[in-house]
Length: 432
Image (cartoon, rainbow, N blue to C red):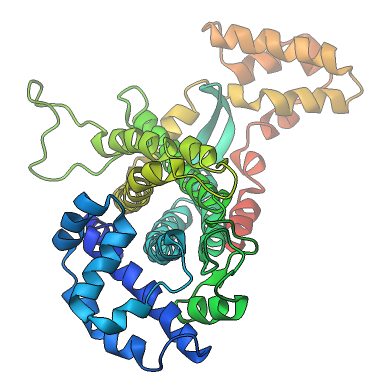
């Protein structure tokens, strides 16, 4: 079942309301930690906490038009709501204590939602891999027929890539689940590491190892890179589907629903619209990787050149990745596979795929590799140009038949031999 964390949910996650609620959570957690350190009056956080539900984002935005500072506008609004107790909020803190710690909260929530979707895609790939474990197909290099594979093996390659993506995402989650309550330049001038540890612990975060005014941006770049790699992996699969669906190939295609239309002009069309869409969206996610890397180099203890970029690329990259995973899961689950088309293409070259086996068999008789290569290639090129069937040409070639009997030649054309280790490879992917 595909997790239902919809695009609308991501819109809510990155909304002004959710942002201000996260800011409020950081301020209250810090306030509670300071109470325990006897820096603010006991009970202050409890008096302020009920006003979280009464935040008015529009009012904060209105105040910001005058203050030209978002966090000051936020704190002004909280004081309007909560009155005197709110004056203790933000004691010894700087804006980035709030901004970066709250961003970590939202990123963790976004990553967890993406991870759920990644699990669903991995499950869908796993089922299709098992279904087509034994379905023969032709492997291709440079787009040209190479040697046999199975369709399940092809899908297992995509499964393995998504499993690697899951590991990267887990590492990136750990990297971004980091905040700071360390003051203007990260030195705890008016706070302490103990207060920071207490406050962030309440939020499920850990302190930045060494903060400046901000949490280090290589952490966010790691997450954006992980998302970019997931998107690239989805695009690789989508590109394969688009190839399989080509009329001349006809090995597999996107599910075409009853009532669906492919073209406004040509009623016969069945276009790979979902996978073309995925290829386009991958560009959007990857486009966030370079700005993420460029955000790492900030001036001294902090500048704000990273801020405007993050406000755009982080919501876009996370929401788009989630959408891509949902869509790709449906494509995999509903993919229509044509075993007869796969076999037709496998047999299209009349067994030319067996050329390496014949080459090695000749080498095994004591013939030099380059000499054997010439013998096999000359028969392969005749078959390629329609001058005969490859296996028959080999048997009729006196130089080949002088070293290889018919049974040995036939053995090189056995699919069971070509695919002998496919099960082991697939099992390795499934176990990884």
